[in-house]
Length: 241
Image (cartoon, rainbow, N blue to C red; front, side, top):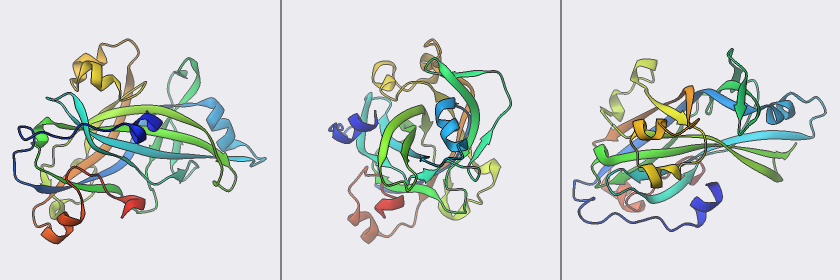
């Protein structure tokens, strides 16, 4: 998915799907829970020889539920090192990832009081929009300069509700929305659509207890000059800003 998304031309929105008022939104990503992380990667995190490090990041793409297509661009969030600052091993039954031994973990995105976030503006009705997110882990050298194997660990499909204005968000747990997590890749959306019930019927697709905590906010007072700098439906943030 990671490689495909960067080379695939995404479908533009037609007039029927983008006929509303152009509005600026912000999406903030916080934490993933009960994620099956391969033991082979955790062994490298725990290793004392420090020949490698494991990095993680989120890929995100807008998906139009009615049109059944990805649109806009694919945003790759900042890469961060997987260590005790962001990783917590959870208690639970023996887990598997693609048939290989794994441990259930929770992972915090940018735990050092930095926002793992992006902004975008669109004329689309957010009731029809979902955010496809994928957690990616990469094996690198100890300096994080040379990247080796890359693993798509899990993915989620998050409704873009944007019920609150950005000025009203308090970053409390009650303000956060929660989305389910799935095994495989977001490409499943192209075959089954964004209906969670249909996705959950696929054997071993839905991760039991897997959760993605996030919030989508509306910027009602966004400056027109800022909106003109960003193409419609383009996700911008992190290293892009």
